[in-house]
Length: 468
Ligand SMILES: Cc1cc2nc3c(=O)[nH]c(=O)nc-3n(C[C@H](O)[C@H](O)[C@H](O)COP(=O)(O)OP(=O)(O)OC[C@H]3O[C@@H](n4cnc5c(N)ncnc54)[C@H](O)[C@@H]3O)c2cc1C
Image (cartoon, rainbow, N blue to C red; front, side, top):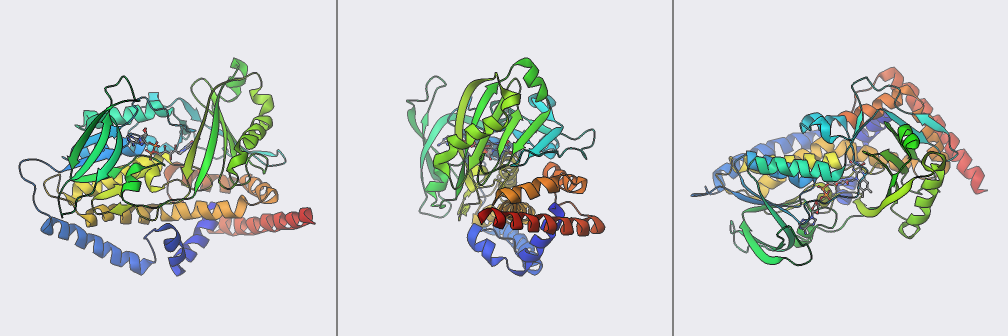
């Protein structure tokens, strides 16, 4: 399924990129345009080096606002690249409401120590509206798994690494930013500094920097400061449930995804294993007032497996559905949730946050020649071009899948039926685990196309029958 859809999408993408571009403000259109963009990127770098003034007596100063995966990864890369880096985080022990699932490639790419991964999930079940359960892990290789992390652990680890690389950490709440009126003049960031004891008060402070990375999540104040515009969002609701030992054993290395109008009309419900408990949750885009009703249904669907559990914590948080209309202005760039980098339909954002933070920081290091020159908007935009070129297909595929399969219960039954196919499982896991659009097998792709069409036709017929 994944590869067929990817191919359809690539065709669509190349013939009419404007629609998506207009809607989501992505920038990677057809092959010939990509070629000319490459050319432009080269020009940008050369121009930056020629036109940006050299900085004397100090290095380039960059503030990263927000110390989640996006901010931690950005600050580490900047500091390693010779930039004077300030990482502003309001809450050092922040436990971001999150399922905490990360793809295998993140462990390697970000050199994560294995002891910060609570669980290695090697079994996954997708459950249809009529409770047909399909194991989708059959093609996993012995070394492959989905990592489950606690966010307070992952975020803290990435921040510590940024500090060890030379970043200065500021425990404070960023409140507003003064945008410079003159070229190359500094940005002034205002924040309430905490001394570790209280987050309610805080001393009013400010800092001058040459560029800013907004990694402050879905309610980004940096985004507001540059009038970045809004995005559609999903509200996710999650309960942390401590299970009796025998029940926890069942979820030891297993994650479940429940589909159906009862658990969510436009997303899915989940049970994810954590260190000593499970996270049970769901989300919705279009029916937010009913979120508790969907959560009750998710709990009911998993009832036999979680009965006797005690709810330890209840949490809710928005998840962006597409990038903001603006992600860069002058010397300010947005990354992670602040930019809107979460795949639709799956709600995955941790890897994309860390990756975008790193890519943006790399563009600044390169553009500033390791902190020796001022950067300009062209340098910041070179991150956007690279990002869109690399991840536009992934985001678009998820968008198409969501529209095809999340629209009715019969369509969800069709999705679960397709997941029974081992080729679909392999393609899906390869795309998720390695963040690469996996090359398909032409014969299997053909069979899959026929199966997909068959499943969807059956789903449509069933929908009509149910409507009459
Ligand atoms: C319930 C739920 C489940 C999810 N499950 C998964 C999952 O299983 N896998 C996955 O990949 N993704 C998941 N996501 C998405 C994922 O959590 C986000 O995409 C990811 O956290 C984005 O990282 P970030 O660094 O951009 O932002 P955040 O993680 O939101 O970090 C922003 C940081 O900025 C700080 N901050 C904010 N404002 C200020 C300010 N004014 N001043 C100073 N600091 C500030 C915050 O304290 C925070 O530390 C889930 C989301 C939700 C809501």
